[in-house]
Image (cartoon, rainbow, N blue to C red):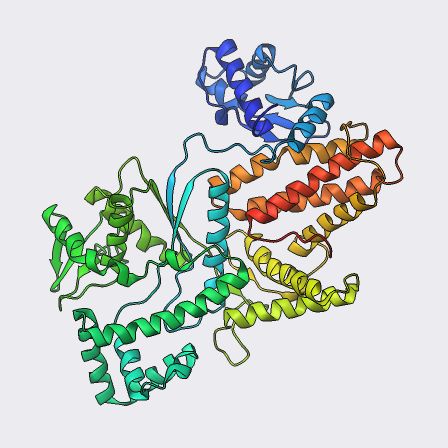
Amino acid sequence: MLHGDIGQELGRRVADAVRTALDLQITPAEALIRPSTRPGADYQCNAAMGLAKRLGRRNPREVAEEIVAALDADDLVETPDVAGPGFVNLTLRTEFLARHSVSLLADRRLGVPAAESPRRIAIDYSSPNVAKEMHIGHIRSTIIGDAIARLLRFQGHEVIPHNHLGDWGTPFGMLIEHLLDEGTGADHKISDLNGFYQEARKKFDADPDFADRSRRRVVLLQGGDERTLALWQDLVDESTRHFEKAYELLGIGLTHDDLYGESFYNPYLADTVEELERKGLTQVSDGALCVFPAGFTNREGEPLPLIMRKSDGGYGYHSTDLATVRYWTGERHVDDLLYVVGTPQSQHFQMVFAASRDAGWLTGDHSAVHIGFGSILGEDGKTIRTRAGGSLKLMELLTEAIERAARIVEERGEIEDPQERAELARAVGLGAVKYADLSNDREKDYVFSWEKMLAMDGNTAVYLQYANTRILSILRKATAEPGEITLTEPAERALALRLAQFPAAVQTAIELYAPHKLTTYLYDLATSLSSFYENCPVLKAEPPVQASRLALITLVSRVLTLGLELLGIKAPNRL
């Protein structure tokens, strides 16, 4: 069995041919094997043009012909064809593709290889603020981060999530003081986190005495006053309950053990700053102790600082973020740091990474990546909000998604059991919300549309879920069992070729931290399946052909199910 991506295997074969024919060393990636859009070809090798330059401006077509002459791939491809200025067209042998499909069906990983050298990876995602309910703005970090964590785990890496809660700082003086004013019976008010916060904020702005008490309370909190800490913990606990309800509903893998709020790093701040001072990386600027990473300036060309200690002796999020890097690489010994945080924070993270490298906390053995993302827009093209102009609460959004999906399930009228209908509505509604986010390039803004995300056709979770349930329905009705795969019709071969590209789609999604690469593949697979149905009857086919086609669609079902699972989306058995 060929393990992994066919394109990678062809790259290895081409690299061997280049070494034999041209005495040059290239990697499989440098063989530039790509899926072909040319009729009659499955893959294309685009390496000859670049190699011709390395060989002293030789004719690229002649270089391509020499590569083809030395290529040992008769077991995989038909006779290669050199086209144009030096493109090598590669067409897989149909019998190889059929055998490969059979081997995929027997492989629980469906051809996706595990990492040869697993990494220990810390990933920061979700990270809501304590004392505020999660709103739609939190959904991208939460969903994208969860999908990336799932993909990395599937590849065999050790993934350690850390939910960097905003649970410290000056607003908590205001919130704790308001809690004291409300008295011990204020628990019911804390449960309305947004209302509680707004009441405290309003009082802080209008009442100078309350504002002064709030500032003094911050000092008590930072000084470790027991009563103040206990009240602060009440706020954190209530907020965590809210967050965990949303995570449970969405099927997000974050737990209480993954909480690493800003407060967690407080004991590390002084040592972090002291080490930076000892290494000569700090300067005093306007009374504050700062680090100035090289290469970062404002519009006036002045160096930009990371403030390690304020002029009043306090610490801010700059020092917390550096302490975070120091903790995870130094004490937890992770290899890689991933931060799933909005794109506007890009420069901040680049500065944190640069300062961490200067301090020796990030070395050549580490990688640190800011996985940025754009905004969610309303259909008017502006940041999505409620009709009243406020932030849309996440739980309200998810509840509406389930309610809308429930109407779709009821209209289809295929499921009578109320509990099964409710479970299906959750799978469809929440899957629609997740897929709408993940199917868009994370770096770009996208428009939130209920109509589009719950459509039964097009690039939606519902379309993929329905494609899978249709396969399962066919398998239940079939009188034959799935058997040996033979590919006699063009639509059969096209579907088998698409199935063989699943490992490449997963690998690309992981390498680029781009879940939309996987969603695009799954949609293309479902589209190929639709074409297959149009040209290749399954249940009406003769027994040997029916058995082959049943095996082929069984493989499609397994790929769709695993692909959706890697995105955190359920594939129900009926729809």
